[in-house]
Image (tube, rainbow, N blue to C red; front, side):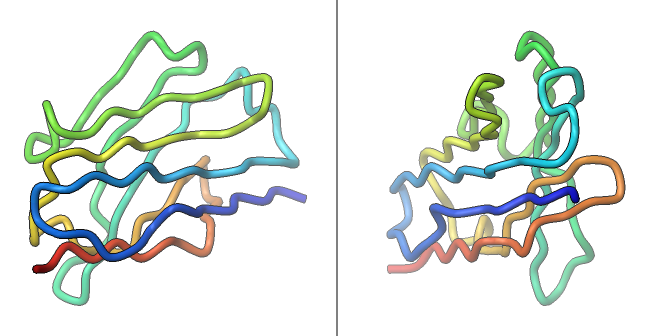
Length: 112
């Protein structure tokens, strides 16, 4: 069955960095676009970034452009989100997504 398992979240100070990973299985990862979303207590799930199947097409939500970078390893079936210059408003549970499937999420907290 489809499985998406996120990891890499944690507590970081403003201006810091984190790298999230999402291990995928159970579907043709190498030929499908993948996305990251995030959710806060105040907001519905918010789209963060999408990467094309071959890693060439990248799209980002405006507030993360220039700070976040999405990448993938199709051999290992892992999706990544490198997050730099983190801000308190980036605090959220981050999820990877494929079609109607979601992982369990990983908590990112940005606080001094």
